[in-house]
Image (cartoon, rainbow, N blue to C red):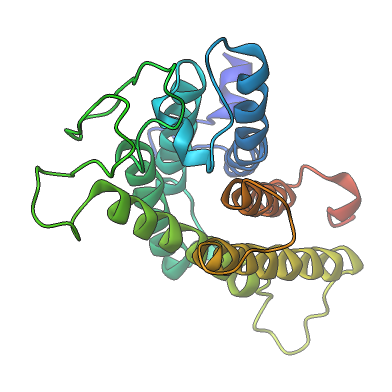
Length: 251
């Protein structure tokens, strides 16, 4: 019971309160591990080939389950995030990002990239299955512009833009008291948050332009940009959760 209370402490005026720092660590670690798990799946899971994007693993056995499960888990936990000093703007941004994360998980992008694979459909969104690589329709064919791929990409773009914004402008906030002086650790954290936010936004630009510009990073460009963006996202949230001791304020 004591261990449970350390994770989810009971308050007199609240039924259950999540441990905020643990929440941030979990979200950060999951974001950090997600692209790594997808890569490991191409080596360890029979029949799973490398995909052009992390989202492409939606249709694969094992790695698809990890992809959907991780993003849904991140999404649900983002709904519980509470900003500094109860800042409602932070709460709304995190909740919107959480909704996007769940949407990314349940609304698929393009179809099968490897003909030897068997499509595994997940979630509750009706889509076609099979080896046809054409975009799957979200609610049947309602014009070529309304496909699950377009919805998926839009949600992914919004998600990363919000996360980058939070790193740049929300995590870096300090006390409004003009006499307040930032600790050396807070200065380091703010520098890291800004670097992570800029990296995330640059990766969004990279993904958006990868079809028109061949960036000098080799094949699987979208996957690589997403990999870096998720690592920047994960690192920022792990630091926010005080996972790296050298960036934690000294008592």
